[in-house]
Figure 1 (cartoon, rainbow, N blue to C red):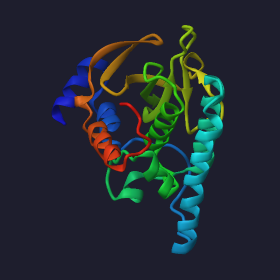
Figure 2: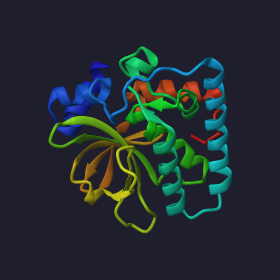
Figure 3: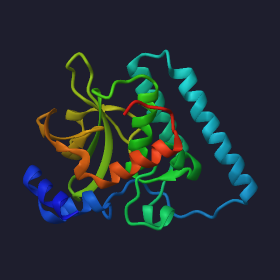
Length: 226
């Protein structure tokens, strides 16, 4: 983990406490949901089955939509289906990156889990990995760490951000409340140069990503080409 911190301090030129929050997840927020009483087990099982069935229906019904329509459908689905919850409360860990199936089973996740679920669902819908990047940001002015999903259109238009805090999908240059830190895809880390990305390393520096990839292969979740 020390190597990750050093790399990102050089890469981003940010203060140590911000980067620690980004990587360790202690400052990753988002949402206002509090711990809620759990329904009986039988009811929970029914709710889980319904969420997964709804997810499968979303994929089936959205496969022939335009890219813009896919983004809108996926963003709306997860923002409506999943409540916000802290990793410590959900998993008993400071930072845990859940697979889409794990997030759907719990019906809850933090901002990373929202972004990851949207990422993998859009990949299932045929959006290319070159167009999608997971983006670490900080929320101004509080400097709280936050993850969103970025979509870079093929036509060179401004990237769009899918966020669990917003129902609207907005261009990156309209999100003045966010300060972009870095982005990543399956194999590479990227630094921002305005709204464009430049390769700055590889995802071996993100151990949570590596653990998630191994766990998803065991789940056989979606058979996405990673």
